Image 1: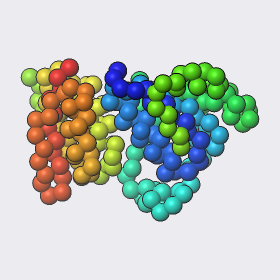
Image 2 (image 1 turned 180 degrees about the horizontal axis):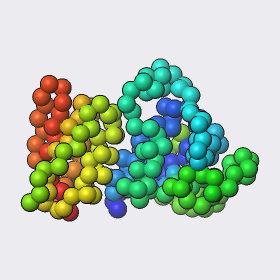
Image 3 (image 1 turned 45 degrees about the vertical axis):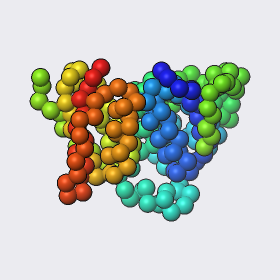
Image 4 (image 1 turned 120 degrees about the vertical axis):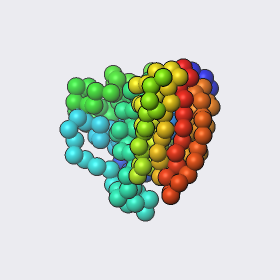
Length: 130
Length: 76
């Protein structure tokens, strides 16, 4: 791997934000960058297995994406893991708040992570927040 | 050498064509050629940048009737 580690904090429930986070994760991971994604707050519910929740558009581009063949953000996150070795971890606090356990989340997410571990893992690299 | 593998990503937006190329590269042998078909102009310029970054060979890019044909050789 080359270049700085990319750490991405994903909080939003809006389509545009989730899409850009997933694009950076996937393209970064397949470009020999180490990628860590921390999924928390309003973003976490979209990663529950079998969910029918879909993120709402924040603006006009979000509306447009609904009708165009844009790769779904969850597919991109999964590709970041499968093709690029990215690590996705759910926030343990958000999991507690929502009453979730790891088995309820998509299989490409790793173990719940707390902030101490995330801050340590992100240290020295780039941090992106959505 | 195997026949050139076609990656038809027409209609898909960035980074779809790149992701489809990467999945296809993993399925061919080193030295094999692939051709990505894309209607997404951004992807047509991004793919050669990615090839250079990770060390695969960009053979050519041509455009016909709104479709970019990006020819690639897996090098490793």
